[in-house]
Amino acid sequence: MTPLKIDNRAARRLWLTAQGLGQTPTGPFDLVETIKRLGFVQLDSIQAVARAHHHILWSRNQNYRPKMLDRALAHDRTVFEHFTHDASIIPTVFYPMWTRQFRRRAAYFARIHKNLPDAAARDLIKARIAAEGALSTHAFDTKIEGPREMWARPPHKKALDYMWFAGELATCHRKNFAKYYNLAERVIPEVHRAPLADDAQITQLCDAALDRLSFGTLSEVRRFWDATEVAEVKAWHGTADTIPVEIQSADGQWTQAIAPPDIEARLAAATDVTSRLRILNPFDPVIRDRDRLSRLFGFEYRIEIFVPAAKRKWGYYVFPILQGDRFVGRIEAKASRPKDMLTIVNFWQEPGVKWGAKRISQLDAELARLARFVDVSTIDWASARV
Image (cartoon, rainbow, N blue to C red; front, side):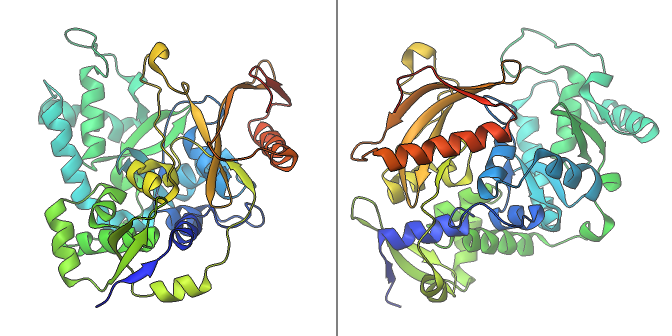
């Protein structure tokens, strides 16, 4: 079959629309449907302005508030926590296709952590949870063994995390971002715990990834969930109902990829994305795959939180600025609730992007909306004003 050619503007439009950034972020909001559309939302503890998961959801609809996610996790059980490429919130309806990922992540955890508590020690912890209910790591008092290296964990934390990765425990709720563990069967509704064969899980994972990407290389399909192996994705592709496409990059080059069978209908239905200016989180799903980001938008981005300050090109926590279907700048901001202030630490215009009065006004409006979201009322430009 001759590949369907998709030019760069159309590709960007498809990708942003598929990931919930095509329309104005207002109107009625359905939290679970939004997360299902995204596939997952990455969790992160950093709160330079707002925690990543809350910011990502707010970017899709600015009627979102953090209590909505807390309720869905702790009470409605319509989402659960586990690992994609990182800790993430996932719709509970996807739980049946996650059994393999429990095994994969638990095996990986056991390989990289020395002195993992044995089954008997883990059973004692599970027995406490069974008797007492959900517990956080603070309910245990074992100490770190050996040198206090980065990411070092005390034995009880290793055991809790291993059982969480293995699917024996599940996140019951969080309090001040601290995770509370409970037995998985107490957290995940029984209707979602029916077993599913491995090959069916692989098919569902790959189908769901391509659906949410709208188009992608096999590597992008695999990286979407990070829950399959290269050979498994290749085998899926051999039997899957997909359309060959060629995607034009920002630099004019073409990349071979695949798309869902309804790709032509998606292209026909696609409209221009909103011109609303948005400040995206560094962990936003549109940002996460750096190769795809660079190829489609010509936007080079990296998170520098682990880069020594003197070696950073940009800053500790820098937010990409999206307007329409292109990235127009970057901004480093920090919120202080005690000071009731959102401080603009730094700002950069993207090369070739003109920042006239209208765009500056749109940035001011988005900063004001972001400030209201994080419950501060003052915006202070510590850097040079645009």
